[in-house]
Image 1 (cartoon, rainbow, N blue to C red):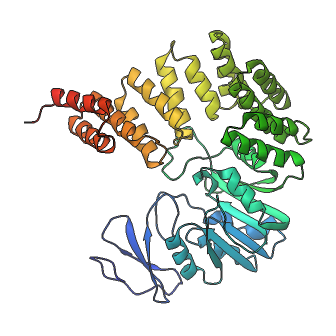
Image 2: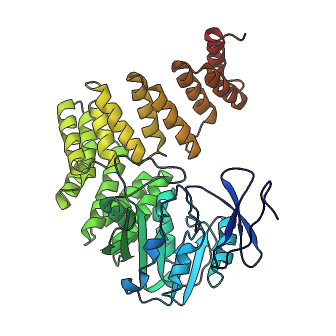
Image 3: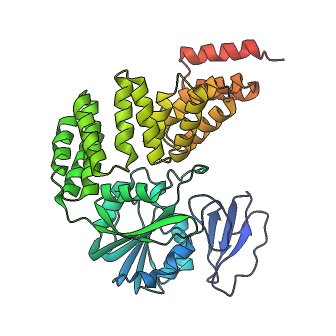
Length: 446
């Protein structure tokens, strides 16, 4: 195997591979001392040793594992990628198993860390590993569509003392998440995630290269399984069963778990059209933790639907002051000021989208507001990024929307290209036919 248009250089004597440029800028070939050659790419999904890329450096998160005092003979590196973390883990633990769904990353890891065991598997689905006492997830859960499910599946593969070490990029107001990264986390939002997954934070770890980290252990509380059941019923649209399961979480003695249960209960009651019951659950959650912005944001939404615009705006601003990086608070504020300050609504939707770039509803509202304030460039960027997450259900409508936006910003060639793509996906759609006729009228062919 050789790289097109490139000369292979001798393998490194340090144990790290030598990289040879491939035919595309992002493509390289890793040459190992064993003679193996593995294709790699520069991408956000993972970082390779000795290569600069858009993925954040994570090696320091693994380097002080001995100081954690974990009692484990066998550990799992979930989402191990290139295996650089496993290399450090083997300095502390006798056995390390890496799990990743990318066969090329695992091929690299097997050469880079031959003493580790590598398993191909999707963390959100089924995969086989031998029982371990601890697991590491570093810059992983923010890439997943179902992070709670991945964490719950990992817990099932652990035996006492059941420690999970997580490090995730820190959320900021100026972040730009690049696919496949879907989320970054504050300490509060990471705590909420591990609680919903049936874990409790045992201790927070010192920040590492803009990563927030913790050691978590399983919750010994029946409310955790009740919350899991309630979420499963919600996903299936079984609202009555979800309501019954959520009510069981109220009996939990763990305050963070009760808060998550109450927030889910409020959502269920809202979907069933019982706004008063939804508000009662939100008020109880706010009583348990007055610093949590989510119950206040939920109350703002109920006030807005009830026609009390001043109260909705006041509550939304209170929620944002509690947590300026809470997406539900920003969405509530954007809704509350939509008709009084389009620019403020635009900025709120923009920040919410930067925190949750894969959520189609937020992206759509940001696009609508961007058009109102005349910023077509932002609207185009938002839809293009959303498409890279695979979040668009109707691809024809997606390309048609991009065509309209390009036309509105004067980019007629791009508009025509997007319209052609939309027409190829939905050739009988009359709206798309009308769009192409409109584009021909404003930009006739020479």
